Image (tube, rainbow, N blue to C red; front, side):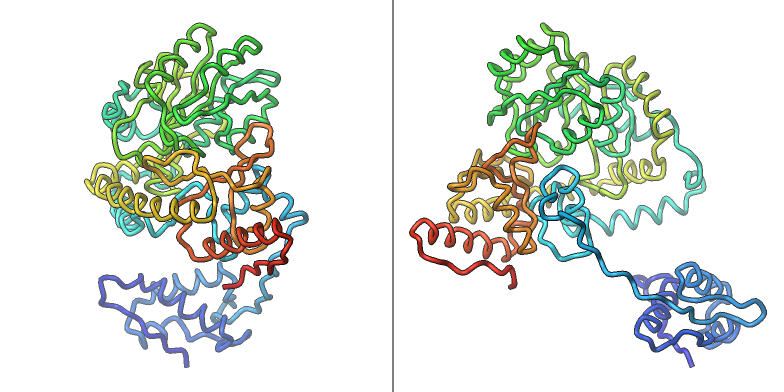
Length: 486
């Protein structure tokens, strides 16, 4: 006899349907219910557990859809024969491919292993407000005016587009709702811009080092990438001026605040010079400010000085609210915003209004500021501890971060950090070597560390073993290999 323990009174209990589905699934997975066994009739199950028959019907139907049960008309529901899940295959050349752009993203998004992801560009889920997201999903789902099965509007949910200028005003950037286009995260915003501005053979400038996923996307369009060397205060303007004597870029894609990967910030003097050169040589500036809300105080931005005349500003809520919602935006000149909206329509029709409503609700309910204050404090503590760890293991810090989640560090006596990252990969640790952050993937001794993941003892053990191994090799004394097993 199948008897489940259902919680029908607790405020924190899962919905009854979920409880039934989970209970039956676990019994099938544990082989307590074997293939071919008949489940209790709907009426009998409902009476025994004192619940609605409709609840049981929904649970059984969901289990059929999941492949755990099958229905025999007029007879009832039976446990289905389930084939074992296929083993996870090791993709050919996985270690070798781990440090090309797409390979890094595959590693970052892989949730099938317990790999320590020190190289990712986002916070651990437990650092964010998952409970708040779930609470607001329930709130939206109860509202009759919430669109859950229809397309969104071309530029995106208007109340959110009206809220974003209020946030931009706090950064010194003036904008109206008509200048905002909502997107599926910053990645789609950058892609829409590239689709509109560029064609095969065009030249674009990018930060060197810079945002590796952007580089991979731009290569798909057949454009010529030219790297502008980065300093702790922003692009090297002398190098930028020299490059402009040789090239005519359509645009310069750059980070100003908490630069990815170095965590540096743009200085006012550098910002003014970059804008002067853009005006003189007639190219657009695409300012990616994905990590804006992780900066704890005032900072200089190109869009602040230019007021969206030559600058296209890109932002996102994926890093702070939810990567799953995929809500970002771009802000620019009104005519350009209209043209980019057309590109959005023909390339993706629209964005998710439900996600946009959810982000709007979370921004306006009053908890977002407190969330970010907690994150700032936690990141500051993690940064201090990670700096000590890296320095203790002989790494040179590019510049001490003033906020954010990244530290850019140079590995000692290494010409290409990809070798060190390869050793880490065999030990179950994902590092981000500097080569992936370079436009042509040139060798680099630098690595990007995400401080939110760097406090795991596995990283400390690996770095210590690597340092000791290097010292032993230098003195020609054998040292044991690091196994990666705690």
